[in-house]
Every structure is written in C-alpha cells, then in structure tokens.
Image (cartoon, rainbow, N blue to C red; front, top):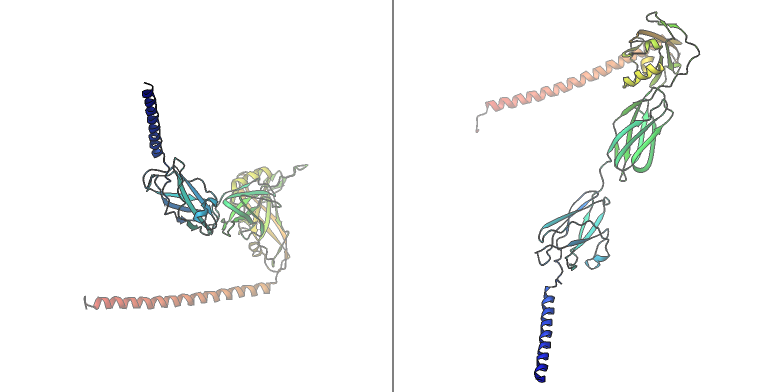
Length: 425
C-alpha cells in the first residue's frame, strides 16, 4: 500500500509538471512579440514656403493586416541616417494610424522658407513592439514670395494737431507710413521692427486739414506691400471766447451780423515763382451763417473751387461748433488770377449757407510779379508750344491713319482674291 501511494504521488507530480509546461508553451505562443511592418515609401508630396506634406502607406500589425497603435516621426535640417533615427528630433502631432495598406498624409507646418528637411518614421503596436525606421525622405520648402496682407486700418484720436494710425499684418513685418497735405506726401515715419500690430502717432499737424497717407510693410524675406492712397482730416482748433461780441455787415446781403466774416490766406504773400503747390485759407463765420453750409457753392473770385475735404458732416459739425472752415487752394490757380505789374491783389470768397449768401475778401502781397510785356511774351510762348504739340499730334494721327488705310487695302485685296478663287483650286 505504501508503494502504491508513492507511485501515485509521483504520477500526480509528473502530470502537474507536464501541465505546467503545456500552459507555459501555450501562453508563449499567445504573446505578440512581432514588430509592425516597416514603412518603405515615406515621401514629401508637396511644399509651400512654410509647409511640407508627407505621404506613406500605413503598415499592418502583422504583415499588411491589422492596425498599428501609433507613429514616431522624426525631422532634422541635416541628413538622417536610418541607424541614427533615434537621435533626430521628434516632430509630434502624428495622425492616428489607419489599417494596413491605407495611404496616409501629414502636413508639417511652421517651417522656414527655402530650407531642406529630412524625415524618418516608425510604427509601434499595442504590445509596444516597434518597427524599424522607414526610408529617409527629404523635402525643401519654397522661398517666401508672398507679400504681407494689411487689414484693419484705423485713424483714431484725431485732434487739431495730432492723430493715431493703426493697422495689422498677417505676418511679422516692418512699419512704414508716408503722409502730407498733398498726394506727394513729403513726410515719413518708419521702423524696422517686425511685428503684426502697427501704430504711428502723428504730431504737429495743421487743424482742419485734409491729410493724404499711404501705409507699407515688408516681411522678413523682403516682400513688400503698400496700400492705396487714403485720407483723413484733422479737427478744428477751439476758438477762445471774446470779451465782447462785435457787429458787422454781410458784404453779399447787407444784413447785420453778430461778428464779422473773415477770410485769411496763409502765407500772407503769393510768390509767383514759388514751386509750392498749396495755400491755406481759413473762413470764419458768425453764428447766423454757420448752419447748412453748401460746400459746392464756395468760389474764389468766382472761378476756383477750394478744397474742403471729403467728410462734409465733420466739416459742418466743426463749423457749427467753432465757426471756422479750413480750405486748401492750389497756388497755381491763385497765381493765374494775378495780373501783371501789381504788388497786391484782392481775393474774394463767395458761398451760401442755410442763413443766406455771404461774401468776404482778403488782400495778399504779390511777390516776383512780371511786366505786361513779359506776360505777353509768355502767353505767346505758350501758344507757340501748344501749336507745336498740336502739329506733332496731327502728324502722328495722319501717319497712323495712312498705316490703317494700307492694312485695310491689303485686307480688301485678300477678300477679293478669296472671292475670285474656286473651291479646291
């Protein structure tokens, strides 16, 4: 009996050992120790100045079947050796893997223009088995030839002598502004600092004056953008209250006014040889004549319309409040009115408001005037120059007409030849 118990114990022990080996062997076969397939077709498909688009075929977990768990993409600005893939910087943001055999893409953003980049990728399955690194792909971004985009232009904090101009660009760029009282500008502000938000504060401006300006920005790669010509108008200067209220008479209607109408040109002399383009005129009206200014009725000496600015609502609001209207007049227009051999000349301004018509004058000194003989000589020279230009233009037109006539005759001959020829001959 004792011998039988010993044999039974040995048999049970042997069975246990065999069962354990079977379990271990079966369990070992169930554990996934195979890495995913290697990506073999990594490539750069397209490029811009700041992006590269990668493409590859998704590997399978086992052969081309199944789906891997994640990707590990590396990138460098120098060539990557497959065996040194782990040393290359990690990109991050890889897309979720698709089933094996499916095409995949990834856009790499925020790259430098005109730069070469090398890429390598590998896959990992759910059991943390990692594939070999793929083939190495290289791509080059394009050079940046796109100009910045300017938007949200605003002129704010407008006063009689200052204003603030702001704008933004879609990429860091310099700031440049040209401005002045004519479309020739003449004044400039600039900074080489690259930024997206731009601002300039302008000082020492003339009150109630129309200013022209143009904005520009240049990016890091020399691409420049400029706006079209734009304008803004400064506010009027508040008038100091007077100690008394004088009375005056309207020269146009004879009505009694609470204060005189005045017109003042700047500068106080008109230099007939000056190359300056503009003169400024300030009209001051009493309260009785401020409302409802009809700007299109303003005339200097019944011939020249002064420039008062485009925003008539603002002009009227300032006129109502301060009683002043600032105007610009082309110096040449005033000079053409001045006759020869005079040392002073009177300019008049007429207009109409809701309160009635008005008329006012201002007398200016005349500098560098000419004699009557010199005036006649210049007029004759202008007439001769005009006739010369007219003759040259007529000659040119006659030559063009003759050339067209020759072409027409040639076309008519071809048409006649086509009519007289037989089909197929």
